[in-house]
Image 1 (cartoon, rainbow, N blue to C red):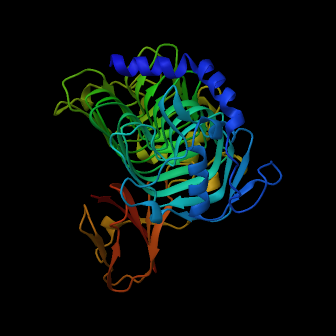
Image 2 (spheres, rainbow, N blue to C red):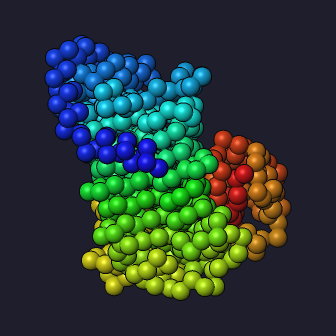
Length: 483
């Protein structure tokens, strides 16, 4: 513990010294690679057209401190989707930017526009290395409009699907997301491991896990530090770890607002459906914990639906009323007391949490309702069908009657839970299309079926999904568990 705190102090308190050292070395930066074209100015950004171009950028930044500072004020744009399979062998992808000590580091400091493209098949296997992710360490950067899909990342400390460590950078401008699995020890998040900045309008759907003795593990952000914000975001993956474990944020030291989470959460100490720990003077407001279960593996009292432990402030937060809270093998759900401004939150049924009216009613929220009713607003919802999703995702609502599968004798979906093949029998019903969705309503897979078929779901991360069948008698939906 002392070692971790000392590293944090050295890395943050003496940051001005590091900047001075790096600027002194700036004159020795290498020539920036040409990449796929462009000159690096705002009107003519460097173009990243291939995985090799992204690798060239990583190699440039990682060549030393001066090169990292040479990216400051430089603009980049992704032109095509980038498949990183070619860099999956061995330890896998080498992250953009690194930090090993306060004399050996290089930060990415540029303006990176993903251009609504995606990076796929990002693989990292460095269980003893810190600052692991697509970006290892960014400082004063802007990362926007970028998706990371089907990632599998293993690191030690400061580990995230998009970024391991984030200092004073902005992650948004309207579409950053990660799908896939992330694991590490300290400061582990589905999107960002250790965050000292703003994260907005983003989501993560994969499972996040901390190894034995882990601290600060969150579905979206591991640790949200002072002067940082997480707003208008969601996470749907399962989260597990040691201490300070939350479905959205492991440890909050600033502000979390207008966000939600759905994955199961388990840890040993300070375990919450939304946030593991909320520090003195910090705020969690206008959020929803729609998790099915929150579990502590130790006999503690620091566990609850919204937050495990707090000295901070809670305003107008809600929790799924059917959520199970388990403490050291004992179901303590019945002892949870509703409280709009407490670590428990106000209990709501899932049917309420899926309605437009719930989010647009100003009286339900502190300051103002969610930005969900405006056609150009942040959020959108398929009223009565799903939890909210970010409008930029472009998800269409069916507008068709939804029939629960238990009411249809002719349809059978099995096995459940499933590992590889989800089989579907349709009896006398004619099935025109089948879709696999995550809990937000985003389509993950789709295919055509006849009388008896199967859908290969082996590539999906572990979690809860929805199978949606378009039939001649309406829309049929059912949840299933992917092992």
